[in-house]
Image (cartoon, rainbow over all chains, first blue to last red; front, side):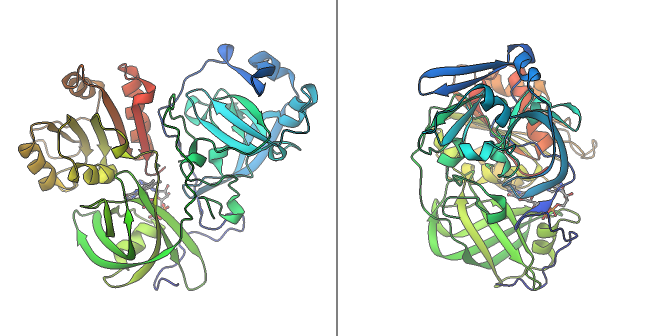
Length: 198
Length: 258
Ligand SMILES: Cc1cc2nc3c(=O)[nH]c(=O)nc-3n(C[C@H](O)[C@H](O)[C@H](O)COP(=O)(O)OP(=O)(O)OC[C@H]3O[C@@H](n4cnc5c(N)ncnc54)[C@H](O)[C@@H]3O)c2cc1C
């Protein structure tokens, strides 16, 4: 249906997915207050069932190859931000040091404070998923998920968990925090997969 | 929002069963539009089928131009009932706002638009049966109005509300009446840009002193904090709450905008 008299007042941009608008600032989003973690006490754990198969400290993280990522980000609350600049470590490089058994096809990422989100494993391989620690050449601030946040820019931004502390390897997909509240299990902005059933 | 991109729910024990109802777009008919302040209009939209709704939930509104361009925005729902086909939305007009400006200037009674909802089970005020302290900035009052309308006021409820001035003190009569009617309800209002000659109440932005005073009134009572408003407001208030010693998992927030 057409809403008479409704017109676009933003300039058209092919890089903006359907239903999204261009945002110049960088809105902060989270369901709870900002978490403060210092780098020295931060680490990142990879779990296989109840076994810890790897623990990466802040120092370890800095020994991985640095990747600079220039990309657009899309938040399910309808804003998109174009040409953002990030720096981080690619899961591709991490998984070279921690071989992952073939049977695992999903991850459940978890954060300080209790947030979780699920992502297919394949979506963080091949330089598609990162542990990011710099935004716009500066340390990521706590408000935006620093010291380290998950960064999976091809999915809606709720998948890029702030204050990331680890992942659990899963054989079958399971809903994370927002996914349990009815958000989409995958979250492709170009297919507008906002809520379950989209 | 629940508000909604990145989250930290706190040590979350309230794991919920995944709900697999598909959210469909429905035709909503505008049945009433009322100006409630210079910036805010209250729109009542009716759908064919009723929905069960909880305070804190929102609906998405979708607009399509004749060229096929689509915009969507979220709006918190207000109602007198938890099961209804008539939904009120208090919408603030933003200069150059693509959707809010259209709704304010072009939309008229008996027109249709597409809506879907209710959405958001996290920032659901009915999930707590305990006492609450509600903290709103400007238009962020909308979910709390719905909450306050359905309460029996058995538990202690405090609302700290920051608005610009008398005119933008939204739902003033309704709130003041409740304040008189229920001894378990306390309304704390601060008007940050009102004329000091005519307004003798609080006039600073919500600070630790205001928060502490209210928290003191809830001493010994298990309380959940709900904060709603623009992103800066919410960020500011939630960090202040943490700083004065409120536990992370007792604070729930909804950000309305950048
Ligand atoms: C869960 C949720 C519930 C919401 N509930 C309500 C509600 O009950 N009532 C309501 O009025 N709004 C509510 N909002 C905000 C609403 O969804 C829109 O963001 C708002 O109406 C602006 O849309 P627009 O198209 O008019 O402006 P846009 O065209 O999107 O924005 C225009 C400009 O204004 C700025 N801007 C956008 N939003 C705001 C803001 N809130 N304050 C100041 N500047 C802003 C933008 O940065 C941009 O530069 C809610 C948002 C969420 C996520």
